[in-house]
Amino acid sequence: MKIAILENSMTSLQSIEHSLFDKEKIFWNEIVECREFTDSINLLSNLKTEYFDCVVIGSSVDVININMILQSIRQYDSQQNRAYTSVVVISKLHAESDMLACFNAGADDYLTAPFRPRELGARVQRLIRANKIISRLAIKKENELPVATPRLEAREGSGIIKISNYEFNSFEQTVTCKGQVIELTEREFSLALLFFRNLGKPVSRELIFSEVWQKSNNLSSRTLDTHIYRLRHLLNLTVENGFVLRTVYGFGYRLDVAGPRPIRKIE
Image 1 (cartoon, rainbow, N blue to C red):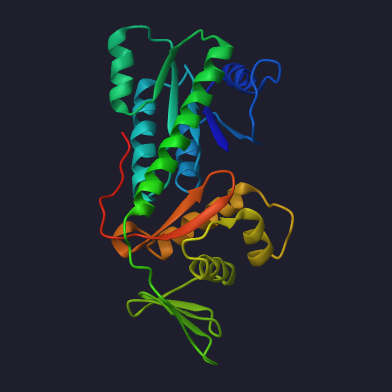
Image 2: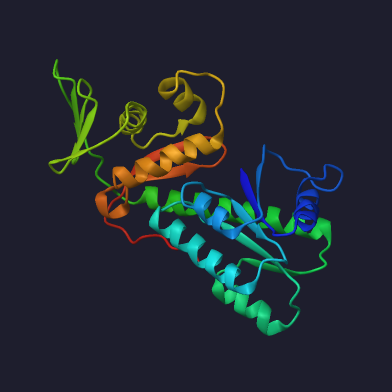
């Protein structure tokens, strides 16, 4: 699980972090990685390649930046077909109109400063927990619909594996889709082939690190997130193209076949 905190003031940033991770006040039942940002541009740059379960925006961030961040988060979630990112905004503005404007811009929760530490922690946990339930139900519902699974074809001795429009050449370490060669690094090729060989099956982070990085110990989650982002983009793993690479909470990833169904959108 990953949480990002954006706050221009270091004192306020530390206060938010303490509220979320004070062991005497709040308990997390899984490992949580917290990333701290004091600049909105830096946060947006990371959001392009990394998925966060929740983003907490502090009270010193101005309204214009908050609106830009909310718009960007919703855009990235939609473009990359990744799980929904919850956003909690802490604000010094107490007027009802300010709160409603923030909700309309895409925020999931709104607290006025000064906030109560335990309340912030409880609200963040509630949003993440609800998100996981919604995502599991949506994926389960999609998987219940009949979808023809593409057959994996291997040409003996050629090193070529074909599935749907994708053709993997193990000897040349290349991937071709609809006649176009896709440039991948050796590691990206291995990662893509691992997902396609396990189509429809969850692939754990441990297996990915072992098979692709040849390491049993976990590298930083940011390293893997960056590779996943690049793979989605390079191979065009979208509903329109027939495949979706999903995040499996607390486990890893799963490459699914996308049938002729409506794109799920959570608002």
